[in-house]
Amino acid sequence: MTAVRPHDLLRLTRTRGIVPADAPGWVAPALNAAPWVVVRRDGARDGMRDGRIPVGVRGPTRAQRFALEIPAGTVAEVLAPEGLATRRGMESRNLPAFRALHAVASVIEEATHLPWGPTGSVGFELAAGIPAVTATSDLDLMIRSATPPPRAVAERVHHALGRLPARVDCLIETDEGAVALGELVSSAGDVLLRTPAGPRLVPVPWRETG
Image (cartoon, rainbow, N blue to C red; front, side, top):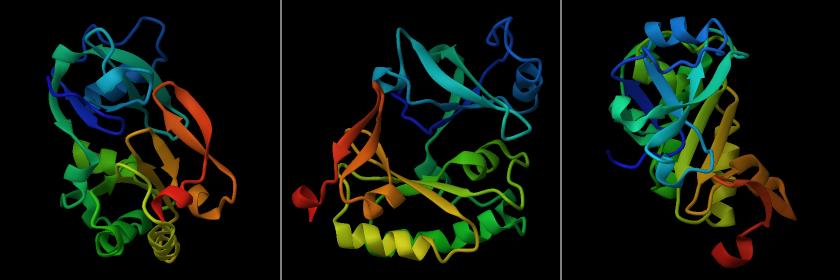
């Protein structure tokens, strides 16, 4: 199958035999209700390790998250966050995170012209078609860029996102890993880079990119 990346949402062909015996009791019912999982950033090249994909299962509450690996052959569909950016469905629900999503396209596309998309509960709801977003949900976003954008661009996007009707958590997904946009624009020293091998501190990149 095509390589998958962190944040991709995968629809499974089956759930039987996937959930380990020691999994919490909510995991199997959650997968039966919505056979969708999200790819984790977990040490696997191209999102796979020996034909298996590290994924996370979402439960009914924020505290219910479970990590496991699935065989690549059980994946029926792959939806990247970029493919959800313009998806229309349950986002018609009048919730702050969805209202913020409607405003995000112009903010990001006008400033960066880079691919982007929703992750977290908004991305999951758009993919799976079941309610996952609440009145207090953040809007989680991903912007894909080979390298971090120039400082002026990053600051412009960060300030614009801060004016939206929901709290926005934005990750810049680079070729080396992901860094939080808020940390990128506020730090004068090192920032945390999330990589498949684990997080590590790296210098802010402005001297290279802007």
